[in-house]
Image 1 (cartoon, rainbow, N blue to C red):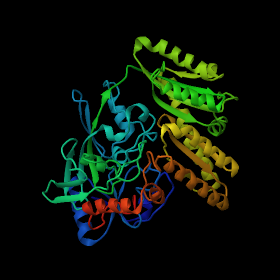
Image 2 (cartoon, helix red, strand yellow; image 1 turned 180 degrees about the horizontal axis):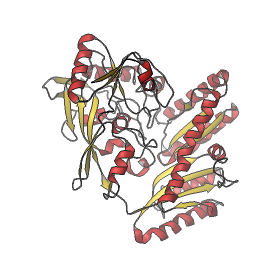
Image 3 (spheres, helix red, strand yellow; image 1 turned 90 degrees about the horizontal axis):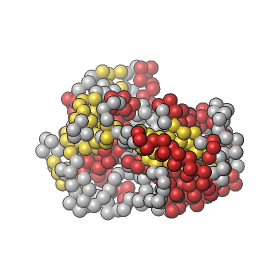
Image 4 (cartoon, rainbow, N blue to C red; image 1 turned 90 degrees about the vertical axis):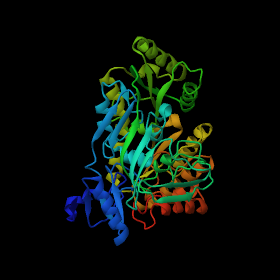
Length: 479
């Protein structure tokens, strides 16, 4: 076990990408599973708490310590095995997404979840049930987790294979690997029927493994995981299509999501007019008349690639006068150009926020498909009426927007926060969620109360207590 007590050596572990900052007196870096078990047992007997530190790419403060010991999993960074025939990849929890993608290159297999932050770790992705751009076709992380190796806050261990331990209705009763019994009730709730990552995953007769996915490290520490893979598509075609009218963009969106569409995207990403304006100084090729852009990707086989590209162009012609300005991507360099366009936007927003030294206000809301257009228009109306600077982008295929408000003064920030709260509350009223992919962490606990009443949140607490009676692990996350 490596232990650091000089703050200068671990100051970077006190924050994450949200810029939320905490405090701690020591950093522990275990080098074996046994060291973690012993540390957890000590925490229970001596009365201290532990915050698990991932890569720091999260946006809700989940890894940020509030006085507790920091435990970094950075030594658990090995890809353990690839079973090609079974389409399974076993990895330790600190393996990064980019390492998984590089490892699978040329194997004929791929890991479908595609969160924007490629330096994120698989453990962090599982903790938040991370999703990303390809969720439109493939779904979020949960679908691709077959096995989890877990150390519970008590120091007991749990090997969870999908399909082995289920709730009896709304009740769990099972034993750890060491034979200690764990039992608790689930709240009888229905989660929002949208892309959702806020609070514990709850379902009648659910698989126990799903409770740990999206639990933000509050129920146990993930040591390793076995991931389900899929055959890699023969070819992927990309396009950024620019639109000159609000309604025509939505007509295009509704068409490509319909069963009669001539193209079937695996991702549909959105950029509003302010996004394009923010990117224009660095990317001069953005059409001057464009008010929106959609980035889509379509999977193809080698023989149909040319005709599929032609189909994308022909469909675009029906819905925008800027079809001739469409950026098409077939080669690796062309795809890189489109990806850089997408990734440049959060960075540009972050730089503006840093310029004004204000906290970021960014939604992670998703709403039912039928409500998306009206929800979007309501956001725009609120922002403009209150003269707020804003940028909206996101996973529009899943009716999931990231609306970012940029404020220049403390007074403007307080006003913007009130508008932000109204937007989140409106998403809930429409049957949506307060967090579609980033979780609750320490920053968004008040928003969870918009989604669930005190009774439900207290039921979540009882689940936490069933695993963590002495409040050892990741205290402050979710509630």
